[in-house]
Image 1 (cartoon, rainbow, N blue to C red):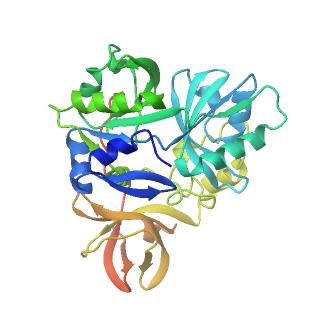
Image 2 (tube, one colour):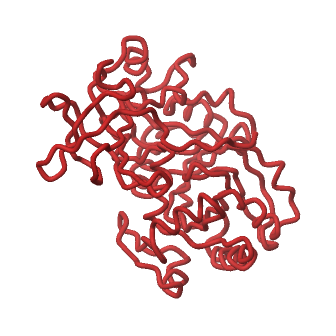
Image 3 (cartoon, rainbow, N blue to C red):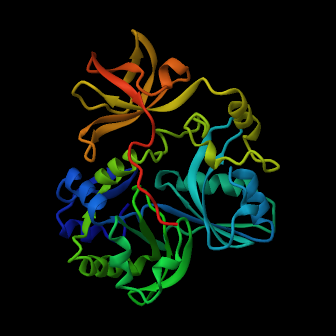
Length: 366
């Protein structure tokens, strides 16, 4: 599958790779250069592969509230909740963004590889309920993300709407390049920025105009490689790594996004027990002391005993060292900061220590 920007990426000389069935840009110049440019200036991302699903109807809020961990009764209109679609075992069907259009309509942004699974799950859970409609609109939308400290300065040139009025995890309906769009102050990089949803046919025009508008600010297109290192440094979870059908939000250190006070939702009992009594495993940060690059799936040991595995790891462009997130045994002598551990890289023990997450945290505007 290809996004509306596939030819644009080719013309820019991007290295194209398969990503869950999508032909996507891995990088244009280098991952490190694109990463640092986003941290220091601004980066432009094609995220049109993401899934968009609308659920609406008189009973939509109540039904959706039973499927996710956020309490939609507390979510104002034009605000966004990061949440989880749960299974009966406390595992995560998917993590997603929930946009509240109004009391009876919600716009869900889901992971590209899970779109069909999520749509099927939602259809199954709403089957026979005439007051609810679930619509997969993924083929209708293009999605672009502009991220970095200069993101607002650049995007403001292309709209008459005062972007300062869009707070963190909020959205509005505005015109960008005189094109109707949904614009939210969200992203997957740990930086300030916006995500822009438009009709697929308008995606290329908005992309090109942003590149032109941001030329003096040094904006650059960014591929999947730097998108991953940026989200990693900010300890933002990647489905299939820090979250899965078998990893709960509590184990992933994401209790903040689980409202255990609301009346009921799928998986609540298991998550409540984990929150009350702790878990056997917990997501922890790791910093390599010796030279090396930790990768997904590498084993972690302490005093020769297997204590877990790396969920995501890489060389950090910002900190210039090997860092990792790892699912480790939830024991104080393991997960507390500065605990000495070993990462097994090609059958060799590489010295490391545990550290707090996230590795990178930028002060956000309100």
